[in-house]
Length: 270
Image (cartoon, rainbow, N blue to C red; front, side, top):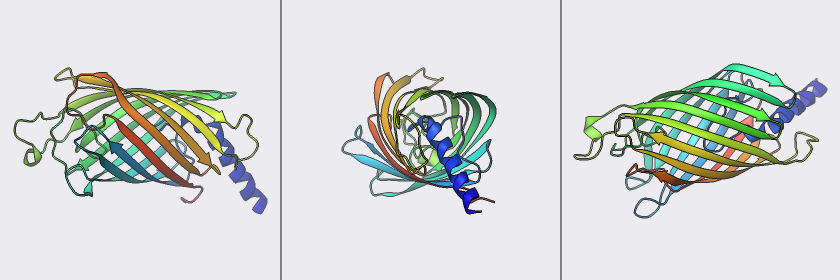
């Protein structure tokens, strides 16, 4: 029994290390977390585009039900409207519907959906369902692994739930939003995988964009990031996104750092 458990841990660790470069910092890959696992995340986002500095904290729990289905539950807390307080929450689910596996490469395709609630005033064109707006979102993710390089594309469509009691007079009223991203991740270390306890070091570069179909306003952000994975179960992310081009006014996620710690527990769901 002990040998079986050790072999299972080595297998899980080997798979996590092999696909580590798919664990993007600002987006989700089409691949899922290991079956019957639970992950716990704590993310802090800091923004410098407001008068002064504001931040948001996102505690999150993730569930890997099987190889094709996983779900996230998030809560949002920030000081964007004064003192630090609970803003709302979100449920996210992802279903992988296509897998093509080859030696040292694979292709994944998945569909995702999100529903969110927020008690923040809605007064920007940008629809952000991770704290700023109530609404729903659906989309597709395509991820290609090529040895140590992983590439991913995401297409999404979001609709905000307009709440007139939180609408500020004279401010724009967000309605619908197209989102799109291109992400790349590269496994820098280890050069050769030896065991599941070996630290991993990954570098990422992501391009994140949105377009308001009603007004035609849009933006494109660049987001470099680094990541360390310890003992195949603990993950630390550090990234920064900044606007490269765009004409969308009064957005929140412009010039934002992200710091995250994640802890994974394997084979705990029955």
